[in-house]
Amino acid sequence: MKRTLVLIFLISIIATFGIGFVAPVQAADSQPTEPVEYQTVDAVESQIELSQTDANSPPPPTNSPVSPGTEEKIKFRKQTIRTMKEQVEQTTSSVQAGNYGAARKSFESALKKWYTFGGTIKRLSPETYTKVAAEFKTVNNSIDQSSPQKTTLVANLQALTRDLSAAVKISDAND
Image 1: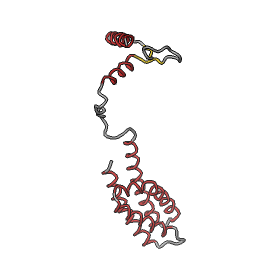
Image 2 (image 1 turned 90 degrees about the horizontal axis):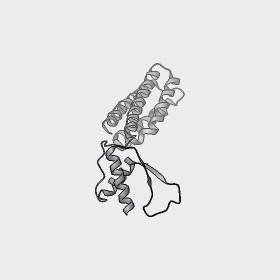
Image 3 (image 1 turned 120 degrees about the vertical axis):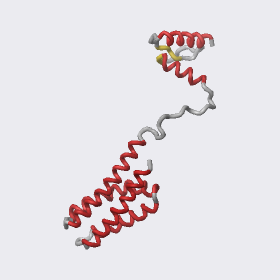
Image 4 (image 1 turned 90 degrees about the vertical axis):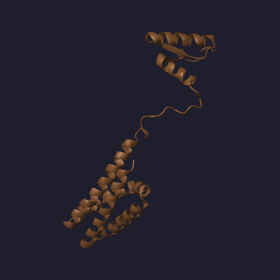
């Protein structure tokens, strides 16, 4: 107990005068049997402060309402859903031009994004999810035909684009 108090006293004196010091961390009455762990004065002081706080007190408030990395994930989700909508628009343009190879390729990219982020849309708006999922299925069945009906496919793609616009708005509104 006396060694601990002396150590605390020395640390407080050193911290007061700003002298850099490294203190060994070990129990006051124990003999070192393993290599001694060293900590800086700041680390020891923070341990002392933590030990003096009430164990029942709430943790200090954080400045950010979201956990680290969450903001990047949200930004990525929002951008991916926008990109998915743009790829469906590109699919529509390709179908209107009669370029079904390019249409299939851009639609396939959009469909992969849907498989990744459809669950997020479902969580945010089940109604929008149901519409978009049905439209993806309809367009997928049409675009895979050897000679799709252009007017029907364009109408289905436009309906999908319209509901994906709603999905983008929903995604952007939710963090």
